[in-house]
Image (tube, rainbow, N blue to C red; front, side, top):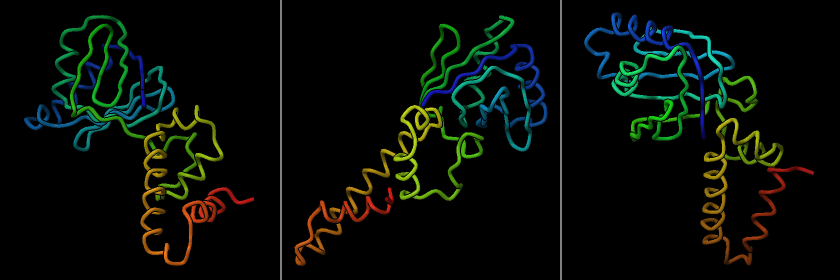
Length: 184
C-alpha cells in the first residue's frame, strides 16, 4: 500500500512546532499518526490534532516516529513538500528513509470504504469477490484479503483432518464456503 500527499512546507513546520510545545519532553520519543484523507492531512500526537490542506492520494493511517519527520523538516526549505509513504519507508523528494517503525495502515473511516469496522474474514472475502483489484489496492486491503484467503485455506485443511473419515474433500468444503462468500 502506498499513500502520498503534498502540502505547504511552512504550514507543516508550524503544526509540528505547536505540537512540540504542547507535548513537551515526550515529543521526541513519540509517534505521529498522520491520517491521509480526501484533500487534507490530519496529524496527531498525544491529544493534539492538526488538520492541514493537502493534495492526497491513497488514503491511509501512517505511523512515524516524530524524530524521523522532524529531522527531515529541519533540512528542507521548499515552498511545498511531497511525501510518499510505503510500509517501512518514507520518501520526500529525492530522500528516502527506511525504518521498521514507519507503518501504513488502512483507514476504515475512508468514505470510499464501505466495510464495517468489525470486519471478519468472510466479509473481506465477499468484498474481494465484489470489487475490482484496483479499488482493493486503493483502500489498502490487499494484504488483509490475502491473509483472509490464506486463513481460509488453513482452516479448510484443519477441518479436513477431522472430516476425512467421512470422505469429505477439500473441493467440497471450499465449494460450501464459496457459496457463502458469493451467494447465487
